[in-house]
Image (cartoon, rainbow, N blue to C red):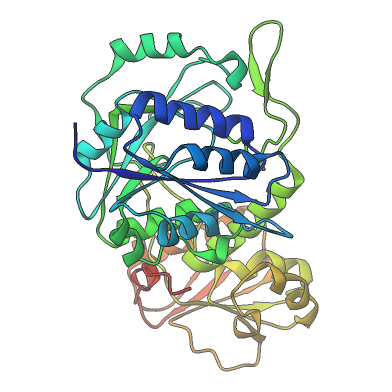
Length: 399
């Protein structure tokens, strides 16, 4: 047994039955040597009262509560627990709806060194599309029907000496490596895209990402705000989420996606194993004629600055509460001085869904070209004065 000890980092909001199931699996299968750090995010389902009861009995549990009146989200609470509660050198970001399989901790710790991030492999019921980074098997969709013996029997036969460079929760890291890059970016609070952001930064910082197929968790998936009503099984045995994605999650996911694009200049991108693929970050200014409110809404996140011939105050007033970026420093009159490394000029009335994809993939296109100077492509006029890239300036979160 490894002498290393983990601090499990588990925020939770109104997930009491899953958190109980998760806690019991850690203590049953991994023992009591690992620390568990919980944060209750203003729950009203008895989570805080239960946490207090467990903390009185289990001396290796630390608890924190957000007293409200609104949620903070795991983007903030992960870091609160890591920085203020975790007492071990190693922390593991761990969802409240995960069952720790026997030996998961040892498999992760076996590969973990300073300057690395190690993920266990998720086993999930078929509620989401399959992929090579996980195992899709149905051992239950709710704790009440969880087939623990079936899972343990499968595990006794299926462990394999396989490793990839992917990353997804649960992942473990040395606390000082986490803190060195500033933890999660509160830009994404309360949730969504904070994981993709920090994974990009891990890679740019030179950390090695390792996923082990020797250690597993069983993951119920998305039992927080995304699918509040849980999952169900139809008479034929097929499983699916009850209801649609919550309006709360959809709205926050849209906000976080727009902020991710503002910060990185592209959508979330990764390979089949979820290893981040990070295009260059250029300093791009759009000069846009005939840019109305709706077009400004579509274009503004995709550049460093946008110069428009429209009145932008209404857009700024509506959008500013959803971002930490100062939109008054991003949006200028079309007659303003343009200081960006790359200027792209076009007429918004000529944009189509097809040529908008050029904007979506503009970083890769500029990288592949590698040319300075003026050029035209489709409706776009380019003036490329410098190919300096800025993605490494995003590694450390100063917030």
